[in-house]
Length: 368
Image (cartoon, rainbow, N blue to C red):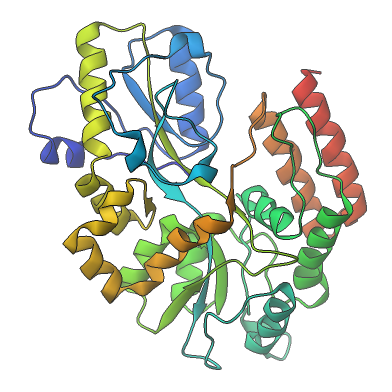
């Protein structure tokens, strides 16, 4: 997910007289549109941060970086799918979806480890009075359910697009089983609301609307700071195995800018990915620190001792996979979300949703 840099914070902490490097423009779709505008218009942007695939030609990026800028060995997660060797893409924070649960009800623990257990606990924790649902057992939010569904696909031994970026595998028996599970939770058992908005899901969790939720590590800081109850985080439960795609934000530097600006951009990227700054962003945002040396810092050790929930996503990297990548990704994502939504809303059968999404995704990759 996109981590928006607040200009006043970066200026306050970076006291160098480098040119202004970055502007906070918003979250996700707004960021993607602005980045694509800057690229197409060849405007003088120096550096941008983004996590969703956008149409960027490598010819527009600074391909060769000074060897002294960064130590590659300091950057963990071989499963991130990004290379720092050739293009100079540096993650600001690694994002993984967690299962968060209230521990003040029925003694929930991090022991929910399978889809079957997820269903059973979701039923137990749903509270109804007559025809009204006072508390849902689980929320799988809408908005970014394609990202969560990619995790369910991996957990069931499948994937949505192959590593070649060309082969679509959305319509598989394993993915059908995963989508049927979602429909069961929402339509049959009604223990999970239909397409609850992404941005209010942490508030739902904090306010007692739900006992459990799937959400980004980017929401953990808010929960940590505002929840007035005992809560825990766990690996996303397994189908046949554990699995999750990796998200996060990357620094991209244009090469068609003055050398002074390139040097300043590299200096900024280096500054933001030092152990100290990576730890700072991890603590404040909930994202996993991208620089593994951050975890050797005393402040990070003390923080994780106080909030051990924040170690879950980092440890889940053992079961992480690169997030799928392909051309025309926004068309692909629209095909996924609209058809997942249709199945969850009961407008299509899971079988129909997978067939239709597969067709649209293949057309998008072919540019049709």
